[in-house]
Image 1 (cartoon, rainbow, N blue to C red):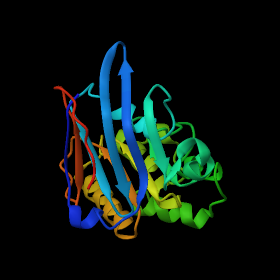
Image 2: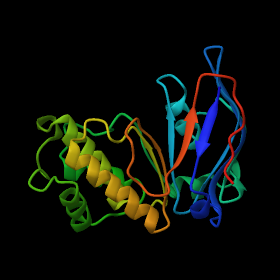
Image 3: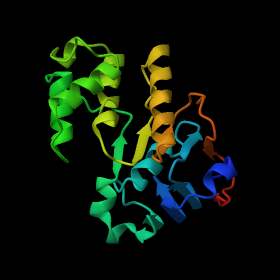
Length: 228
């Protein structure tokens, strides 16, 4: 599979890799999704993974998050093999899949309380501030089955604001968002990057983010993709 990469080398060259991948290979249903894939993500970097449907974008993200072990290759977290620092890696990463992961019987506030307490205690004030920032003020105590698909997505994205994770991994996070929601999420990504956070994102949306790095999974013969 072919991968093409473009980047702002001035922005990325001076940063130490947070996540690094060497010689990654993955096959699904007797079809090679990618091979010889090498990449790295630095502090402050936003990497957009692009490709046609079925090219392996979601599979790649799940591998990089430790949720899929059907691969060959080496993955390092801050220079250490992933298997040797998995707890630290898990604490430093927040993954939002293309399914929003919102319980419809819970309220937005309860959803954030439940997901946040899995890692650390989060104050009610911080939760309400996150929901307000995502445009959900007044819906904090509404059961999520009464909310729209776009509001479900906003509840999920509010987790970004109550998390201390330095690496965000986002799979199609712009799905169902309106124009205002798209602009808001782009702003959150830019702010996270400007504060030294890193972002891996799959989307067909054209991101308006300065210094964006793009990695494209294609359909022809694969050649190694690396960051300089």
